[in-house]
Image 1 (tube, rainbow, N blue to C red):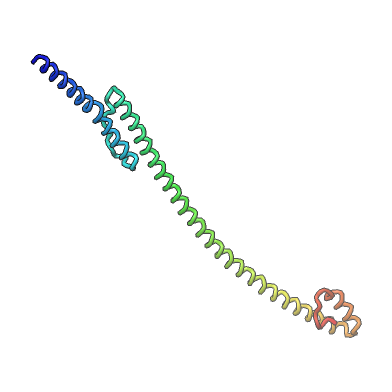
Image 2 (image 1 turned 45 degrees about the vertical axis):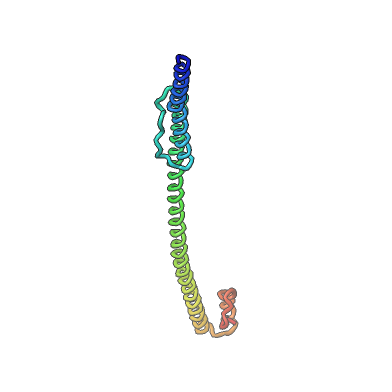
Length: 166
């Protein structure tokens, strides 16, 4: 009977030891594995249990907390970079729009300026022709001799090619 009781005590001690190992080590490892799986899936709101423990399980939990914190920081940096890229894209679009508007405005301005220059050129040519004609008539009135007119006309008109100079 004592042997049976000793055998029963040994079995109970073994079962108690297994239960203690299961409770103190196996369960926290399973919980830690679940936390790592959630972190790997992108869940950064997961609670990390066991970080306060002074043993290896606590070390693993604290290491997992560092991974979680780094993942949170990385996600924040990625979000900030995405916002910065979006702001830069919008800025680039505004610049391109302003450049297009400026191009239209400058083109209209220069088209108007060129039209004004062309109009002024035509007016200047017409005034030049009128002045030359007036000068030619004045010369004809003052010097009726054709050779005198031709000499004056050649002095003033040789570069103009006016039909009435010749």
